Each structure stands twice: as C-alpha cells, then as structure tokens.
Length: 327
Image 1 (cartoon, rainbow, N blue to C red):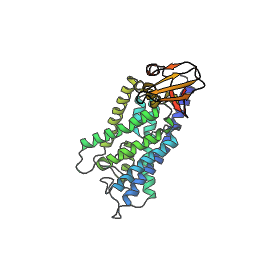
Image 2 (image 1 turned 60 degrees about the vertical axis):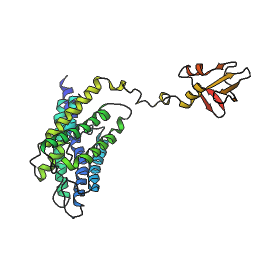
Image 3 (image 1 turned 30 degrees about the horizontal axis):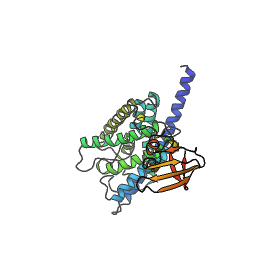
Image 4 (image 1 turned 180 degrees about the vertical axis):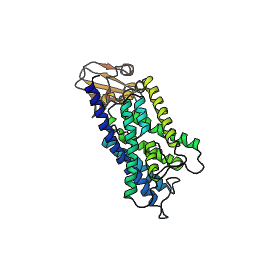
C-alpha cells in the first residue's frame, strides 16, 4: 500500500470520525434532552432521578426519547459513518472486521467527545441541574448492574450486527430495528441501571455533572455485552445461519408456498377430461357431478387424486371464475 493510499484512508477516517462526533451529539441531545424533560415534568415540579422512574409514563417517555433519538440520528448518518455512536458497537465492528483499528480509535474518541459536547449543550440550554447520568437503582448491587448492562448491550449490538452489518434487502431500514431495540431495552433497564448501554453516553454527563461511585459498571458491562453479541454473531456466521431458514430475503411471489386450497382440491377430487374439452368432477364425498369447461387444456386427459397429488410442484390446479385452470 503506497503513501497516497494511506493518506487517503486516514483522511476518510478523520472525516468519518468528525461526522460520528456530530451524529453522537444529535443522538444524545435528543435522547438525554428527553430524559431531562421527563425528570422536570414530574408531579412534584422538580427534577427526579433517572431511576427509579416515578411512573410508567416517565418510563415510556425516557425509553421513547432514547429509542427515537437513536433511530433518527442513525438514519441520518447511516450512509455516512454507519451511525455507530457507541464504543461497544465500535468494538463489535472492529472484532468482526467491519472497521479497522485506526477508525475504531477515532470513532471511540469522537463518541466520547460528542457525548461530552451534548451534555454541555443541554446544561447550557436547559434550566436547572442536568440529571441524565445513569446510576444503579435501589437494592441493585454492582454485580447485578454489570450483568444487566452486559445483556442489554448485547441485545443492542446483536441488532446492529444482524440488521446493519449483514447486508440484505432490508438493510436500509436497519435504523428502525436498532432504535426499537434500544427503546425495548430501556423499558427494562431504566429502573435498575438507568440503561446506560453506552460508555460514552454515561461518561459525557458525568464529566459535566459529576461521577458516581458505580461509574465503572457502565464501562465493564457494555464491553462484556459487546463480546457476548460478537461471539453469538460469529457462531451464526460459522454455521451459515442463512441456510437454516432460506428464502427470507427474497421478494419473488413465486417463492411463496403453493395455494393450500389447490392442494386439497388435487387430493380430494377426481376429474376426467372429455373429448369436447369438458371436465367432469366427481366429489368423493357427495359423488355429485360438476362440469366445468377448460378450453386451453388438452382433450382426453384424465386426472385422478393420485396423479394430481403427485404432479410436479409447478403444476397447480386452482378454481377460479367458474373454471379449472392449470398454471
């Protein structure tokens, strides 16, 4: 690789990292801004902790703010930087070979700096104390916090790997699934850990408003979650998961299962083509004759339940508009 190529790659990495910085700001201004709004709209009129959430309405508000914030920002920057915004996701992308070491380092720095900038923007824009830093809930010990963060982060990272990294017809809609995953994880995790799931998202507001004693939980848990999700993804790739349930990414109608009514018709009815093109059908249940005409079929062709049932899968007999057709 010559120096010109190295310079070009480094230039692209720096530009992508800068845009990742901007995207992280967009994501967290929307997401953490919603959390701050939820805390300020409590019935007491003052700020309430991120967790425990005082009501189901606040829980859904916080989850929707983060989930929709990621959905919007990821969709905006998906084609530019990949819409990562999370060191745990960056780690997974490095491990699967989606990004190189230099871009990984630059992305992590951009995400951390973007989180700090977003927190500073919210602190300057909004009244009162900034109250968006996650912490462990009552009666939640650090071990529980680590494992909760690990599992929640693994769900998010796996969604990124399967929906965005794996390329198929639905890749363009990956931000929807990823945003909904973050939303669902927040519904579960907010009360117990604040649903950090992102070391940069926790570090940014901590720089602005102070660190908690359990801050390390939000670095270790997401890192382990990234390793867990990457391991599962590697296993799925190794066993060639796409062969387990083939045809899920096609949009060809012919790949759909055959008409079940036609299959029953072929098994339960007997028919005889006459020389005049008429098709005499006798029900095995009623033995009553039913004469339907079919002009485009060969004459003198007899069909019995056995021959119909054993015919080629591309040959389907179906009842339509008063005639029997073969397609």
